[in-house]
Length: 105
Image (cartoon, rainbow, N blue to C red; front, side):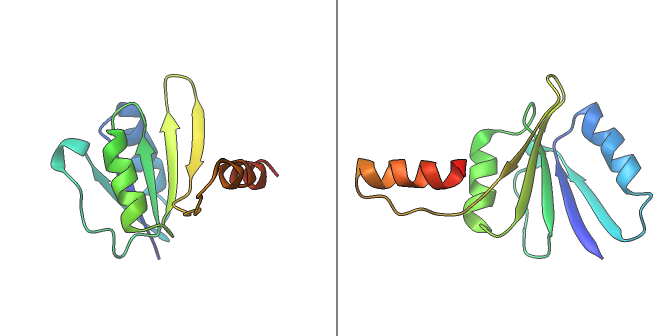
């Protein structure tokens, strides 16, 4: 069973939660950002409403669990963004450019 957190309190996420709960292989939880952060230990994925969740919360989750699959949705423009907690060590501007080139490929 996959454990998925829907992080946000929008109508869009409520509808998504209702749809996903119909799948018996998914364990769906929903939490409003105003409730604070929770233990991410058993989660397989987090779907974040970018229109509702503070960016600091998203970064905190990625830092705590860089391996966590995180998908950001924005209902206002229909954008879906997959986030990564992968860390790149950059000491020079050349290192930063190399990192950007790797991500573009």
